[in-house]
Image (cartoon, rainbow over all chains, first blue to last red; front, side, top):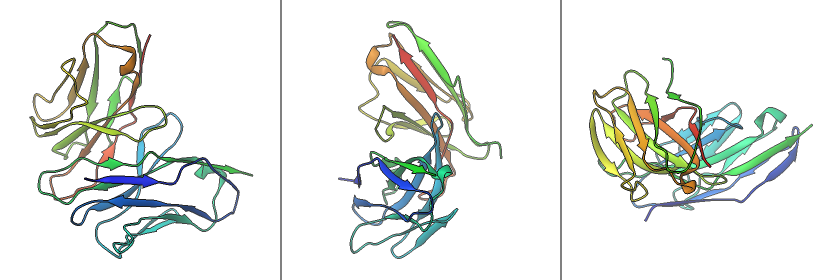
Length: 114
Length: 114
């Protein structure tokens, strides 16, 4: 079946540190992959996406590369800010006609301190 | 583009009462999704509409839950005879009709059943 596994949090970093949040997936075919971010008390915001192998999604300094050979979509940022503190969700959308539900990981909480 | 909106943002109810939530999708989107998110977990799919047709329902959606999208625009999610286990964030998302279209989420309705 389809599933997403994320590294457990919380991840605690100092401002300007390098961030990696690991995400691996299991899926048949060629899913699309997403990172969503959730700030306290809010819904999910799309951060970035990739729709095929070797695609790199990027937004607001965050990047993730779709690696089919390792079934991974790790999120990275070179220099985090306090405002990046949030919960990050990796998700996949399976490649199958009419099958439209996103499969989410459990989320990774990031706390950035000044 | 005003984004996906949900109402109410917060709802506190007593066990056994009925509650109804509303979702207004992005105006040009014909696909609408409901998800449920419990504390510390990623969202889980509940149901999906294409226009006014409800095309898929999760096993999570017990008989006490019903969703409608009568004119293919806004949607409602009703929970009858609420239970404490129904306490969660209920998220609505919408997308276009293309294959593997990105889903955009609303701010969610947080339900607390006492």
